[in-house]
Amino acid sequence: MNTIRPYVMQDRAACLALFDSNVPQFFDRSEHAAFERFLEHDVGAWHYLVIARAGAVVACGGHAVRLDGRVASFGWGMVDRRLHRQGLGRALTEARLDACRSAGAARIELDTSQHTQAFYARFGFTVERVVANGYGAGLDRWDMALELDRTRG
Image 1 (cartoon, helix red, strand yellow):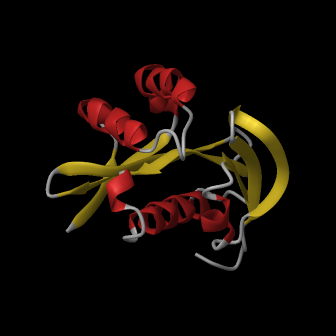
Image 2 (cartoon, rainbow, N blue to C red):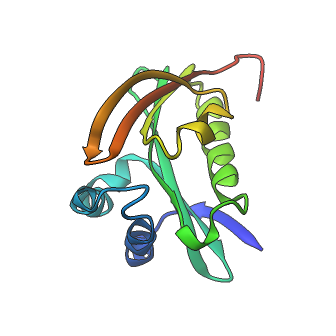
């Protein structure tokens, strides 16, 4: 059984291992230091979640709502590479979408790579900009956004 819960500092090593499992296809190794800094210094300003299965962290990702309350950002979402295509990413994304709707956000922004942009497109995110090699050699940055339907949720 999968449990979605808030991140706690004891999850740090497991989240870093999730990151490492997704290098080099989904993250550039150079991003590791930024993710580590995020977990050490910035995670408290985010609503960061983990999915635990049998006590082990198998996915993580979060969102933050800007001060105006209208725009939210998704960040640092990932699933253990060995467990892709099992619905964990969908569950994590749906939890974040629900939280953003509940917070009253009208728009969600994210950046991702060419390897996961189609995943987010299935939720209605549209491409706003593509930067070739934006994360590193061969790893393009795709900026995407979703205008939330105010009648849902």
